[in-house]
Length: 142
Image 1 (tube, rainbow, N blue to C red):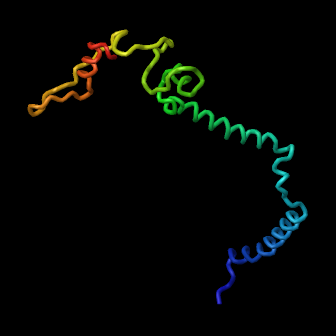
Image 2 (cartoon, rainbow, N blue to C red; image 1 turned 90 degrees about the horizontal axis):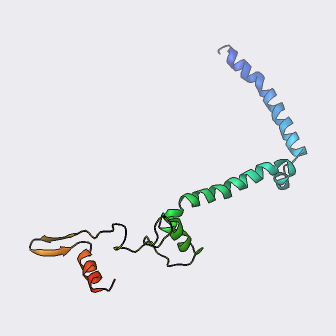
Image 3 (cartoon, rainbow, N blue to C red; image 1 turned 180 degrees about the vertical axis):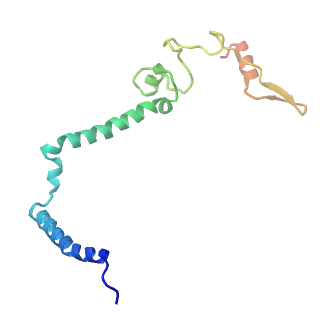
């Protein structure tokens, strides 16, 4: 049989101390139980308010950052229209200039219809439909 080492002696000496500490903590907890109402007491009002503000404010901040994706446009006037805050046609198309004036596609400030058609293997292809749009504009339909 080996003689007891320094480490095993200290572990054996700590056992009664651990048991006494555990008993004292258990008695303290039993004497002062934590009730659910204690969480919303006056001393925790700042914590609860801050938590609530963080949840509500954080959700609002994320929604504000994603508002262009939600509305489908970067234009604030069209955002208001798409959200129902202003009168107008709900659309993802750009209907207003950045200064809020209505925009007429194909007619103002350098809007140009580019030729996107091509011949491929002897077949005519109008990729973006611009030829049809230009023809309709010339006839006065658009």
